[in-house]
Image 1 (cartoon, rainbow, N blue to C red):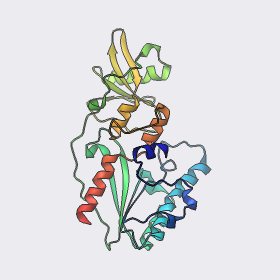
Image 2 (image 1 turned 120 degrees about the vertical axis):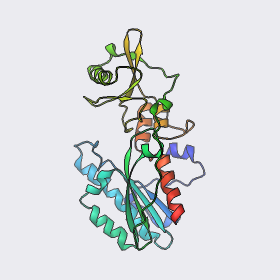
Image 3 (image 1 turned 180 degrees about the vertical axis):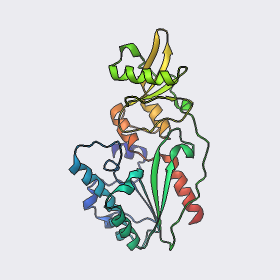
Image 4 (image 1 turned 90 degrees about the vertical axis):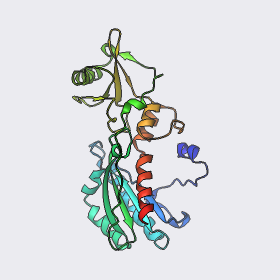
Length: 273
């Protein structure tokens, strides 16, 4: 919350358990945006901590409570999550509760790369409206932006691949095998083929696991993407304030909604509202 306050000092902030939130204390709005925790649905989620993941999934019910409390004021709502949100065993019941409050639901699965964001990031956006029929938005696709434009030319931290750990060496070799020339993105997944910087970046997660390779004097050199590059991959402005610690910055950015995607949804909604 501290980071969000630093970037939006004029916005009221409330920090409390969503399950116990008193929505009467939250100002009503004609449009509500909700991003329940995706950790319980994401394919990248840990297989351990089942009870914790169940608790995180239950945060989706906070939107139902919010819409019920403000049903006389709210006309639209957008809920963002990973596509696997639809596989939740309670998803049908959750949708039924939303519809019982008078909202239709239209599903939009969108890759941020198709909106001009330099990252492949597929997310599910559920557009809810007080309409008899679901409100399917017309969102114009844009050309893909290569990650090359996000590269920090002044970045430090390069290390010879030969001096890196076994995991990095293995992934670097795989990436270079598939992309023998130029800069190459490498993901922290064994066997990942790598990706040219002339394509969009792979999905930014909450962990420091995307790196870049370059040719050095004595062979390939490797470093992880820095906060500036991750910020650009997520479509945030360069001056957007973060924590300053890379591990925390990765967590914040990996959990964030891409501004370009949110902007496209809201602008499309305004055109038909």
